[in-house]
Each structure stands twice: as C-alpha cells, then as structure tokens.
Amino acid sequence: MSLSAARRTAIAATGLDRARPAKVTARNLKTVFSTMGLAQIDSVSRVVRAHYLPFYSRLGPYPRETLDRLLYSTPRMGVEYWAHAAAFVPPETVRHFDQKRTEWWRNDYGQRHPETGEAFRKLQASVLDALEAGPRTARGVADVVDHEIPERHRGHWGWNPSQVKMALEALFAGGIVSATGRNDHFERIYALPRDVSDVLPQTPLAYGPSEAPELSLIDPVASRRRGISGAENNVLELTRTAARALGIARPDCLADYFRQQRAPTDEAVRALVDSGELIETDVEGTRALKWHAARTPRRVEARTLLAPFDPLVFYRRRIEWLFDFHYRIEIYTPAPKRVYGYYVLPFLLGERLVARVDLHRDAAANTLRAHRVTWEPGEEHWEELTDELCEMARWLGLGAVDVEGTHLPLS
Image (cartoon, rainbow, N blue to C red; front, top):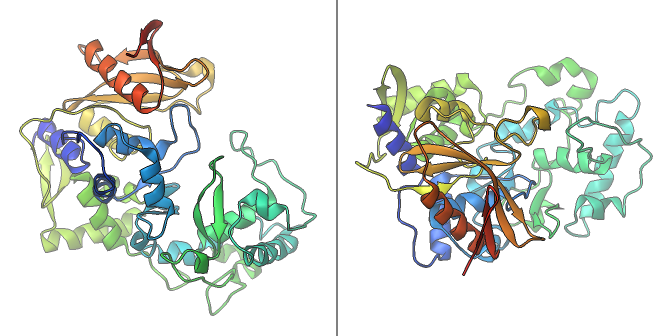
C-alpha cells in the first residue's frame, strides 16, 4: 500500500472524507461519535472547547446544544473517563477499563503522603458522604466538607488542584464516583454512580485488591506491581475499536488510542490478525495493520481545520509517519520557543495536512483570528483556508475573520 492510499484510508476511517450534510441532526452526531469511538476533552477554549471541534470538522456547523444534550442527558451517548487522557466514550467502553478502575490507587493522589495521608483518606470518605446529597462540582463539595490538609503546589503548568479536587479525582479514576456533566465554567459535576444510571455500579473505596484492601498503604512497592488485583482491561475490545477508528495503523498507534500498554496490545493484534479483522500490510516499507472493512477511496475532498486533540492527529508519531507532518500544539511551549504559534490547528485539504494555523476566537472583537498561517512547502491555498475560516466563524457566532491582519467582515 502506498502512503497516499494509507492516508486516504485513515481519513475515510475517521469520517473526514464524507460531504458535510446540509442540516446536522442528532443522528449525524451519533454517527460521528460511533466512528471515532471517543472525543478527547480539554479545558482550553482558545477557539471553542476541544470536544466540539471534531464534530465540526466532520459535519460542519451544527447546534452545540444538541451535542450537549446527547452527552449530558440520559440515555447518554458518551460519558467521561480517562480513556485517552480525559475523554467522552460510549458507556460500554468504560466497562473495558476494569484494571484501570480497580487499581486506581497505583497513583498517589495524596493517600500515601507520610504526614497527611490518613487525613486525605478521611477526606475521601467525607467527599463520598457529601455526594450522598446529590451531584456537585469540586467547589460545591469543598463548601460542605472541612479538612485541615495544607494545599500543595503541584507544578502542573499553573494548575494546582485543591485537596478536595484530588480526592474526587482519585474516586473518579476508580469508578467510585462518576460525572453527570459539566457546568457553564466547564467544571466536572461529580456524582455517585447511582445518580448516573447508564454507567457502572459504585465500587467500594479501597487502597488495594479485595484480598488486601490496604495493600498500597502497607507496602508502597506493591502499587507499582502489575496485575495484582486480578482484574484486566479488555484490551482486545479496545484494540478492535481503535483499529476500526484508525483504519490503518502501526501497533503503537493502536496502543495509544486508549493509552494501553504495548504487550497486551500486541497480543490483541495477533488475535485480530488470526480472526481476519486486521490485515497485515506494508506501507512503503513500514509494517502496518489495516482494518478488514476499512475503505480506501480513490480520492478524498476533505477541507477542514482539526482540533489539536482530533483522533486523526492526537498521536503525533502517526501523522509524522502518514503525512510527513511534524506537529505540536505549543500552548505548553514557552513563548520564545514557539515556532508556529500558541494554539495551532492543522489544516487538512484533500489527503494532505497542508498548513498550521494559529487560531483564536476573539470574542471581544467578534472576530476569528488566524494570527499566523504556516504552509507546508509548495502548499498555499488561501482561498480554501479563508472559506473554511469564514464557515467556522459563522458557526461560532462571530462577525468577522482576520487572517494575518487582513480583516474580512462576514455578510
């Protein structure tokens, strides 16, 4: 298979080769979500919250309130979990992360702190008591839960979650609490699983497997051992979903889709090759795996800006291989070291990633600003890019586009 054919296969598998519908319905949104298998979440809203963009890239302008309803109203199309970083995934997908949920305590959220660990564990119990009254944000829980644990600077790019937030995040990772959605400030609203009927039943709070519930506190080394709970992620099903969503992939691409280890992913790959669901192929000297039902269109007419967290591009090694396109979002790069801008979106045109666009929704000026556009060698398609920016600006409710200082009012 040529690289060109592999690119077209990848674009088709993720749903970017299809014509945008004249009117987007809930069914269209469900189809896109099913095709991708996940929608990554990120709090940065330089343009719009990240999970909205992949649906726009595939469908064009759509009512965001419809997507909100599908994600936040029962029966929910997607629920939050740490599936690929933070992501919305179908409720049944959360069930494939048994080991991850069961062994949440491998990470020390505060429960093993030599001085405040005991107080933190009591705080977790208090947090669960607070949620008995109903769903709350971390701030809402903090309003009704008292503790005297000193807050700590965690050095994560200025994000320093409170002790209450860390207690909630530990419980969320373990499936001990779930989430009903997000509020207007994009804060996660935590709830007991009984209040989220389409997710999992509540699991007990424990710091080790059922036969040794205090194991990680007694023997911290145990928290680094593999497979001590007896639970396993359903890596076969996760790999199957990833293979279908990617169309063409290397084994490392399949492992990254749901952030699984290579060894169990390789085992799942062997099973899917044996079953005929994955077909081994050569892409100009690179061993690859093609989903048996993946289409390879003779031509694709894609034209869209892609979120930094879009499934087509979130695994940077894959797009370097398939598209010869080196990409970084650069929001975490110190300003003097940025090459392309702050919030950089790849521009997909046809079967090529042809540009990097530093994009910003300037609400105060009612303008979508492309501060900087960096074209790949031999690629300059200003008309196509401007048309795409104007369509996105209208979807965002803005009145103008500014491309590197050129102001374009929208009629």
